[in-house]
Amino acid sequence: MTLGRCPGYPQRVLTLRNWKPKSAKAALAAIALVASTLLMGVFAAGSYWMTEQRLHAQRAELWGQVQRHMAQPIAMSLWNFDLKGLNAALRSEMGGSVLGLAVVDENGKIVTQIGQPLPVAGGTLPANAEVLSIDIPPVDGHRLGHILVGWSDASLRQALNATLWLALAQLIGVSLVLLAVVWVGVDLLIFRRVAELQRALDHAVGRDQAADIVPLPDTANDEFGAITRSINAITRRLGDELEAGKESEEEARAALSNMENAQEGLVQAEKMAALGRLVAGVAHELNTPIGNIMMVASTQHEVAQQLSRSVASGGLTRTTLTTLTGQIGEGADLMLSSSRRAAELIQNFKQVAVDQTTDQLRDFDLDRQIAEMLSVINHVLAKTPIKLVQQLEPGIAMHSYPGPLGQVLTNLVMNAAKHGFNDTQPGTITVACMRLGGRACITVTDDGVGIPPENVGKIFDPFFTTKLGQGGTGLGLHISHNMVFGPLGGRMAVQSTPAVGTVFTLMLPFSAPGSDRH
Image (cartoon, rainbow, N blue to C red; front, side, top):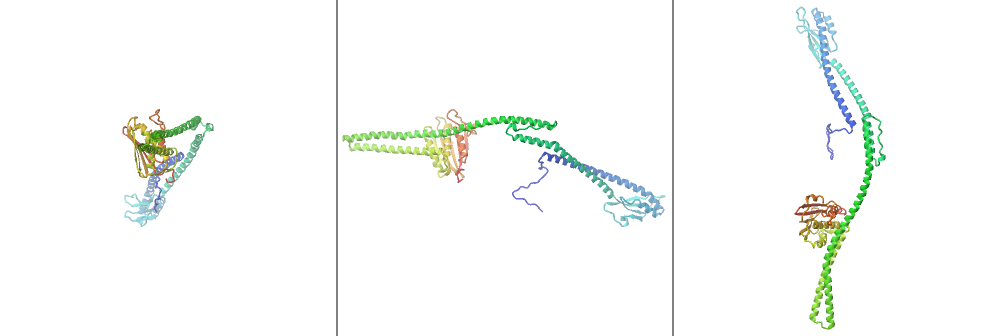
């Protein structure tokens, strides 16, 4: 019968190498068991060797006794043809290791046979028996023959084996008793006291107040007494540190709360500052069409007054009327185009401002959303030598948060404009979007000064800025990083080479994590 593999479960083989006791008591018991087993093995091997030696010695002694007892009486009885005396001499040696005896004359003829028949007399002996021969001493120079002895060491071995097993049983009993005594003694003297110390330490660790830590009773002068005193010293120090830790914890919580409040205020200030920069840019751009409207309106007012004077004086000619109506038409066209431009700017800014100040989840086209946001930023960059380029793949439908997305892109573009170029250095910032696998990929690339390698790993840290005291808060990229990994559910990476430029890459899902389409 074979055991099949159970699907889903690895096959494990328990070996002595990977077996480890789960407690010191079990390890000590295993060591004691192994030591006693080795001791019994050594004793058994020694006892077996000694038994073998004793067996050989007893066999030699018995065999010598048989030879001495039978040689001379058998010779005399055989010489005198005393068959009765011969048999009596043979019977006296029967028993023990002697199974049977046969006397054979010089010609090989059996003179007499007693006990178990020997092979020479047609009999068989047990497998553990053998036939030994004793030469009969010659009488008056005549050889009389020899004695065949059926010999077996079974009785000797049985007696010696019984002695050996008795000794092993006694050793096992003594080992078990010793093991039990050691087990109980070690448990009482060591492990129970160790368990008490452990419980005391666990109790001390689980306390929140120094007053709840109770010192251990110190009643022994042995090693455990020294350990107890050391533990009491440790627990007293732990209590002092608990009190100091509670005070430090309260101070740390208060500092953390103040820092969180300050950070929240700075984050909101950063958001409003970014929106303020957009407001300033849009206001600057609105000045042009509004100024044009005011200028045209003033001109139109003058044309209307001139037309009114000409009508009142009766000097209105066809040529004058045509000229004045042409001027009025040109002014109306200029006012209409300027009004449309202003309305477009206000609409774009309104959408961007609403998006950046709310966290509304809605459907939008990525290219159109980015274009609207960049149209506002472009007005901010119009008075700088930086060129803003768009490379937007159309038709990327998103179900996400346009507000955080606009905030991120505004921060990245404005950060590139502020940190990537010198005040008078011309350059290009390229914003691109495309489908990449199952996600939308947005890149913001500049060909500015780049980021030093030692600062690349720090730019997303809060309050890290190289323009400290020059209008930089160090929160723009930190906020962008949190928005990308948070509500937008994407990833953000940066690659920069000094004197070559910087690329920020956003990988965003088409549906944000908070939507029901995700």
